[in-house]
Image (cartoon, rainbow, N blue to C red; front, side, top):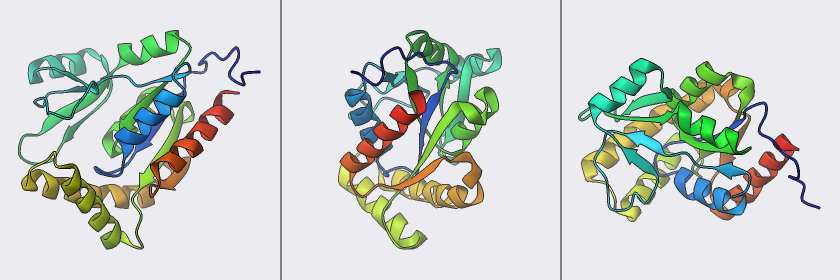
Length: 209
């Protein structure tokens, strides 16, 4: 018998995967969504940045004016600006996209960083969020950042300037995990994406059954 039988996402849960660039959030969320396609779904990320070759179907691209209009009207469930310097590109999630997933009886899976996670908590409440922090392997902050830099360079999507900015953000993210431990239900070291997906699948099952 399917352990999900009769599930309805009420109260409205979110699964939030939080971590620095290069930690594997997108890969893990895609694999998890594929394994539990009938029960979880990834909403599109709204962004003002230009499309990139490897984006796939992760994003909905809007102008800064359109983004700020959504923000002003309360249409965004959470938003942030990344990186903190240079272009200050906006990212966020539309509330109506999350509502649409809940109406299907599914759980939205969102990729977050510290500002987005705080935004979701402010809007929906801490108890509505199954919050998982993803950390790179390594003993100590310097080793973790070295792993992230290597991953970002290997995936060959970003300029050196962008990678430096992402590593600076990652350093702040790692501190955030320590200083705001109450925002996380689980902290997981991603040294094996398939193993992490299996662990997360178990968390989701326990949450909804």
